[in-house]
Figure 1 (cartoon, rainbow, N blue to C red):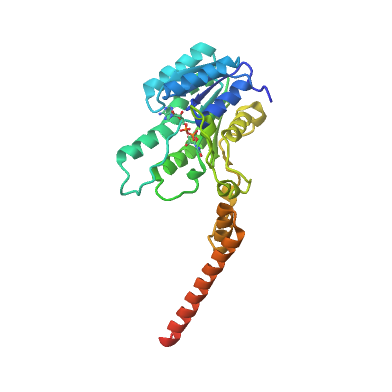
Figure 2: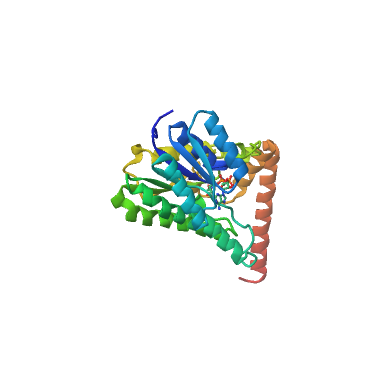
Length: 301
Ligand code: NAD
């Protein structure tokens, strides 16, 4: 393990649970004074105690990143406690609705945008005042959904796309103060083990094997990337969006009978059965083609 942050201070929003908790733990492990900002007080206190009991310097502050007064007070508190702010990880985020645009409400849209996009904006705005003194790094946790979508995810995808744009805008504005700004866009990360209390992951073989890298992501994968980007080793990187998704974004996906055959084999463990299903699909396709050609000849087309 490296020790790249001794004497430095980081803030991780949404650090009580999930990916944020793994990031906070990794940075603390590498010597950082770690401030966790979260609305979940119970989980935040548990995380704070866990880090302190391991001998790390850590503090939990209850604050909602979408409320400017909360943000201002929290950032001020961290600076007064540790006398610097070197790394800000804007990780706090909330999920998408899963309902059609006609069913989504303006309140849902506003809440998701205010936590996922306004939150990082406010945190950056108030942390910059302190970071300007010595320089620093801001890392925004977006998502591959900034670049690609499933249906009915408009507020979430828009918030993350906005975050990618906020990143390059801030990177240019803050460059004169030696503040680097980067986006990390994770794909599917299973956070079960970093919940409070931890949960048993319930992933299938298909979940793992559909990833070119052979598995679903873990919070530790994102944490080690963030630690690298926040360190001086990445001093020539700013403004860009780094994707960490086990290769999913590079994979071209057309559903055909071979994919269906492989998926059924993975799910059931029964290759014979999956091959039989594939044959039935191909037979149905052939029957459809011959029916179409008969129809065309009857209609003289
Ligand atoms: P999570 O729900 O496990 O953790 C999110 C944390 O943010 C929680 O501790 C929660 O209390 C906190 N939080 C929520 N709203 C807040 C607010 N207003 N102010 C302060 N804290 C708040 O989520 P996660 O899966 O660990 O996701 C973390 C980040 O990573 C999010 O920005 C998410 O969009 C992004 N992300 C997650 C995945 C994934 O597959 N898990 C994939 C891509 C991107």
